[in-house]
Amino acid sequence: MKTSMLGRTGIKTGIIGLGLEHLEHVPYGEVALVVEEAVAAGALYMDLFMASPNVRDYMGRLMKGRRSQFQIQGHIGACLQDGQYYRTRDPAIAERHAEDLLTRLGTDYLDTLMVHFVDEPDEWAEVSAPGGLLDIAHRWKKEGRARAVGLSSHKVAASLAAVESGLVDILMFPVNPAFDLLPGETKLEALWEQDPYTGMKEAGNQPVYSRRDLYLACERHGVAIVSMKTYAAGWMFRP
Image (spheres, rainbow, N blue to C red):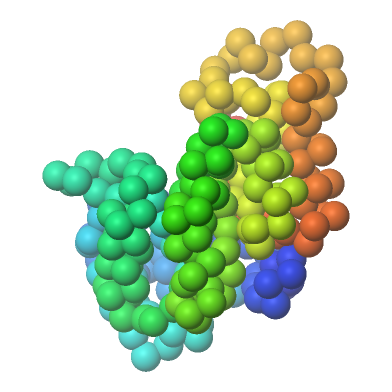
């Protein structure tokens, strides 16, 4: 597989990675088949945002004795309560779930620690405030528990603020030919509806915030883009 450098991080990886969300509630054997196929193909960069213990434990079993073959992107702010995923900005709760990920993976570091699911400018202000989740991520980087610090988002304004701040090394963002047709502030839920795609005039470039501006800012600042929802979460396969 072709490889690429993740921006300014010094991490070299295959240009295709693996999102593990679809493996969250399947048996270990199926997880192992998919992950082993990915590793064999060179898709070593794997996103593991889910807080469910089973998939974390399964990945720990698969990584045992060969940590260097995996590049794990974990998230801080993705948590679990009574079996239900939720987002939190509480530093103590968020860090506890991130530490649980390290424990279950049987590793002392993540390749990337992403501040999880920040879509609005006020959310960015909250996570980047002193003592917030971004501070924790940078502390982990300083301590060697994370090689790089990132942000996951679905909208341009918050992402652009993060990129321009110089505080994130990696941006996880939905990049695909369908979503790129829409304004950068389109709500996540609307991306799979038909209406926003009707009457488009300037693909991906409408005011106020442009996806193109975001991508160029990433290039300018050396911030790597990790594409999520590359097939519009399956929507591009529909008739």
